[in-house]
Length: 149
Image 1 (spheres, helix red, strand yellow):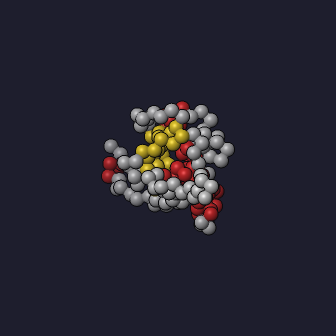
Image 2 (cartoon, rainbow, N blue to C red):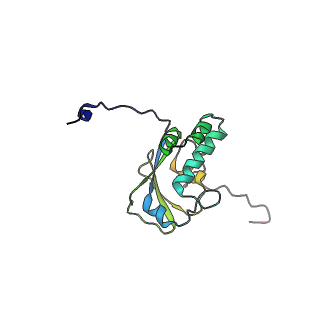
Image 3 (tube, helix red, strand yellow):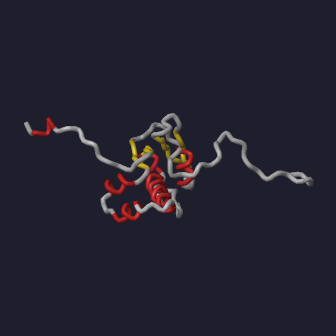
C-alpha cells in the first residue's frame, strides 16, 4: 500500500465568503447564456464577473491579481463568492436557472433569462451585492398629485 493512507487533513486558505450552487442542467438548457451585460453569459460566470467587478469598485487590489491568474481553480479561490454547478436540482423552470445560496439554503431562486447578476446576487444575500428592497416590502411609487394617478 502507498503512504496516502496516513496523510493528514490540511486546510487550504480561500477568500470565499459565500457559496452559490447553480443547476447545471438549467444552464445547459439556456442556449446562448442569457445573463451578463450582453446577455450571452451563463449565470455562474456572470455572478463571478459581478463579484470581481464589485471588488474592483471597492478599491481592493486583489481583483488585479485574480484577473492575472490563469488557472481557474486559483482564480476562483480568491473571489469573494464561489459559484459551483451541481447536477439537476429536480425543479426545472421554463427559461430560468435554479440557484441556491449557501447562506440561505431554504430559499431557492428560479432566475429568469435576462436578470442582472447584481440583482441575483442581492436576492441570494451575497456579501458583495447591494441590498434591494425586500420582496414583501411595499413598492416605492411616485405619489399621485391632486389630478389623480
